[in-house]
Image 1 (cartoon, rainbow, N blue to C red):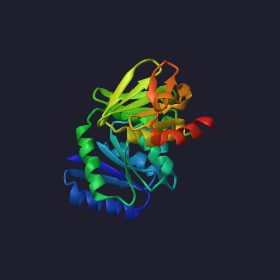
Image 2 (cartoon, rainbow, N blue to C red):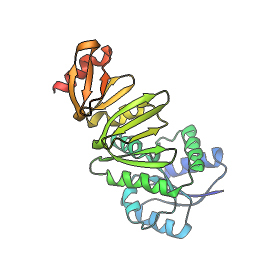
Image 3 (cartoon, rainbow, N blue to C red):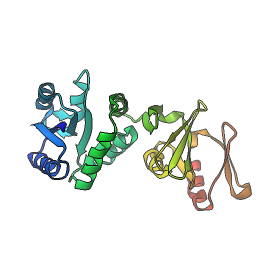
Image 4 (tube, helix red, strand yellow):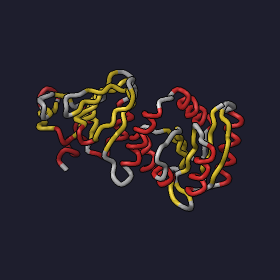
Amino acid sequence: MIRSVIIENEKKSRNTLRNFLQKYCTDVQIIGEADGVASGIALLKKTNPELVFLDIEMTDGTGFKLLESIDDIQFSIIFVTAYSEYAVKAFKISAVDYLLKPINPEELIEAIEKFKSETDLKGVHSKLEVLLGNQNSVKKIAFPTSEGIELVKIDEIIRCESNDNYTSIYLITDKRITVSKSIKEYDLMLSEFDFFRIHQSHLVNLNYISKFNKNDGGYIVLENGKKLPVSRRNKQAFLEKLLR
């Protein structure tokens, strides 16, 4: 059994989550519940759970405040939050698991299955480090790889290149990171940080472009000399973005 606790501000949401877990995730045992930061910290010290369902906004603070109050986190976390564009983007960038309210049973089951397959607490800590460090301004992104978690400063990413269901991330250090996520996901995450999808296969950091050449259908030249095609479909929007 997976020993877990629910730290959630709203009683109705706690009841819904508990009922869904009892119905769809029978190997999850709820050993305690709390409704705020202070009561949540006390509960964690008392119960020592493996998995915590953690609300973000609570009456006496946030779930982030709770985590910052704990010296040694020895549990995994699934965040539970009402819809917030910034919060969701922060979770995606840090690669942490989250559930949106109202909770979807299928997404809950998927989150539990993911928890079962991820037993490395070091990876959990790395993701939380990125999430907590990005609270004021997003600076890092967590890339889950076959070897663990790669923490990368966003301004050190030159480009992303699609390869079927994988994406290669190229850094200013000449390092390449390969992740099993589509380039579309990183387009959604990075579009507000001066990244632009110039082609179906290429997402680039505009800060590393040295030239656009209209010959041969149009292509860019990066500062490292790499040439990449600009698709006809994206060319106009790309040029407008470049000239702003």
